[in-house]
Length: 197
Image (tube, rainbow, N blue to C red; front, side, top):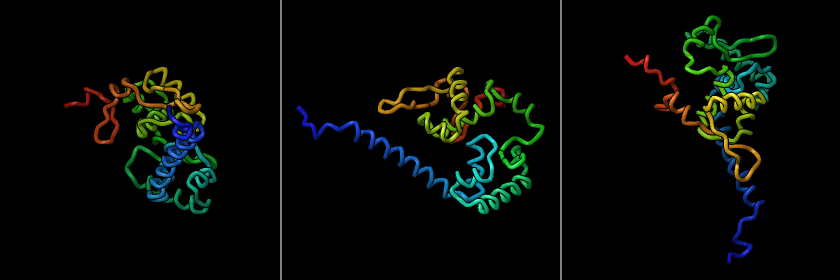
C-alpha cells in the first residue's frame, strides 16, 4: 500500500499543472519579446482579430503608449510600402489588420470552407499551437472565440475534450482539418487538387 506521502495531492497536481501552464506562457512571452516591436504589434493585431485602441495594444505588448504609437507608425509605413494583400486599417481611435479593399470577393472564391474570417483566425491559432486550453484560446482571441469554437465544432474542424484536472477544455485539430488543409513545412495551405499543374 502506498503511503499518503507518495500519493500526489490534488493541490500538488493543480500546482504542477499551473506551473506547466505558466511555463508555456513564459515561453510565449519570450518568443514575443524576441520579435521587433512592430512585428509584436502585428502579431497582436492578427491574433486578436478585432480593432484595438493604442492603449490596448500598449497594454498587451507590455510597453508605453508612446512606444506603441511609434511602432504602429513604423508598421503602417511598412505595409504602405509593401506589395501585400494586408493593411493596417485605422477607424477612429482603433487599429486592425485586415485585407486591403477590393480583395473580399477573391477571399470568398478561394476559401475551401464556409467559415467567417474571425473563425478562420481562431482556427489558425489552434493550428499554430496544435493543442491548447479553451481558456487560453479565449485569452488570445477574445470572448468572441466562444462563438468561433461553436462554429468550428459544428463543422468538425476542431475537437474539444474536457480537461481531466480542471474546468476548461482541450482544443485540438480534427481529422477533417487535416483532410481539408495540408500542413507541410510549418505552413498551412488549402488542399486543393486544382492548384496542381
